[in-house]
Structures are given as C-alpha cells and as structure tokens.
Amino acid sequence: MAKGALDSAGIESFLSDDNMVRMDWFYSNAIGGVKVMVRKEDVEGALNVLDQPIPESIEFAEGEHYEQPKCPKCGSLNVTYGNIEEGVAYTSAWFGIPIPNIRSRWECQQCKATWKDEEDETEDDSEQE
Image (cartoon, rainbow, N blue to C red; front, side, top):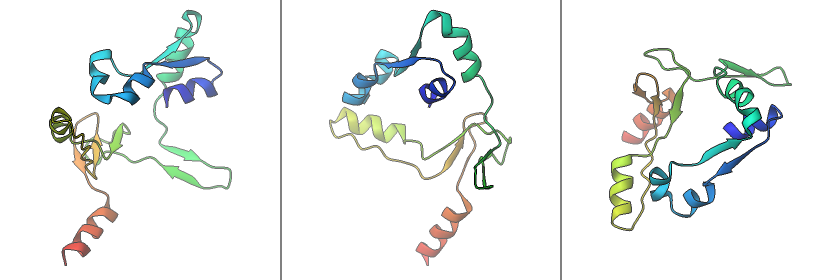
C-alpha cells in the first residue's frame, strides 16, 4: 500500500526483501520485514505522503462514497480486519505445518479494542439456531 501511494504521488520506490518474506514468511521478523526504499533526495517527500492521515471517506466518480470503518471505542480510523492469531500461526510453523488462523473481527491499532461487524454477528446468530 505504501509503494502504491508513493507511485501515485510520482515518487519512485521499490520493495526490499519482499521475495524473501514471500518464500519463507517465518524469517520476516529476523530480516525486518518488507521495506519500502526511495532515493535519498525523495525521503522527505515520501515521508510527507506516508504521514497523511487516513481519509474518513473515499468518493467515487459515480457519486458513491466509501465510509472508512472506525473504532467504536476511541473513534480511530487505524483499524484492521481479520488479523492472524499469532500464537497458533507461530506454534504451527514451529512444527512445520503453518496454519494461519484468521480471526474474523476488527481490531483497533490505537487502543487494541476488538469487535465484529453487525453482519457477522447476525450470521453467527443464525448459524447457532
């Protein structure tokens, strides 16, 4: 996503160590993960692009707009959906059978609150009946 934002702003960039992480994701923490690289003279511009806040909504050409999800606890827009259950993933990788156990819920990166979508809760309720 960062590379895409930089490319759309006209700042040339490339990803370092992305192939290594794709080949063996277990080493990602050891090598520092995937890195976005820019030229020295573009560093300030790249930081300005990447430091822009998350927009609350995105307008489309057809007059429609997408409303960004917000944390119900703190109101932050810095939320993610379906994070990997790290304990299960690391334990299974240790045994040589990587099982990325995905949680179907939202997590706020600001206050660490978690919640499910209203649609997910209704699906869960109907499945239990």
